[in-house]
Image 1 (spheres, one colour):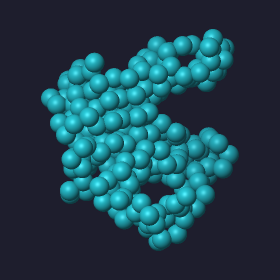
Image 2: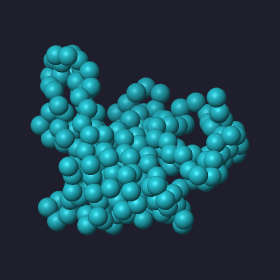
Image 3: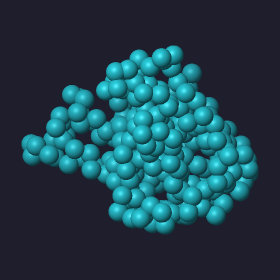
Image 4: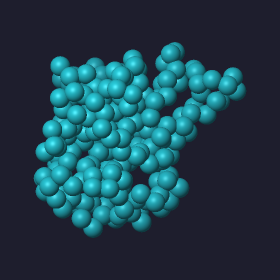
Length: 237
């Protein structure tokens, strides 16, 4: 086991990261994405930003922290005006809890990294339901410069099967990406789950995604504020 270390060469404190995606480089390092946490309504209130960091494969030492665009950073409004983040406060922007950077992949030439939110940012639209999908964002990094370069809209499918009862928990999200080439062709894995549904478990769908020609939405902070029909979609199969 290799323990991940933060920028101070110390193990991450409890509840300060939620590691998900992982990508191996040719330099014996790994990039790891963390979903962070946005839980003002879960009693022990915590708000942690997501990250994409590079770690040494042997020691776990943090080598690099890629900048996360501000639109992804969680913002919680102090709805009850008590000067702290707690039950009753309202997320107003950024990633939602447990549906952030669930995935990560690096192109075969090692020059670019892709990660994506599992579901929509707060300002981009709702979570996936049995009737509608969710507006995830695919984020592309240039690993030579270490900077985010482009973002693309990925609309998930709706939840595959109604929960039983219908008010019980259900979800569908973009949970994994795999870069097939250096031109923006990816495999995208969606996972749907519905509590108590017949044959309870996951419904899995695999798509091929071609980003070449799709709209770069990195300059759009809130998809809810635009005509979504002006965004050119990527090609899927």
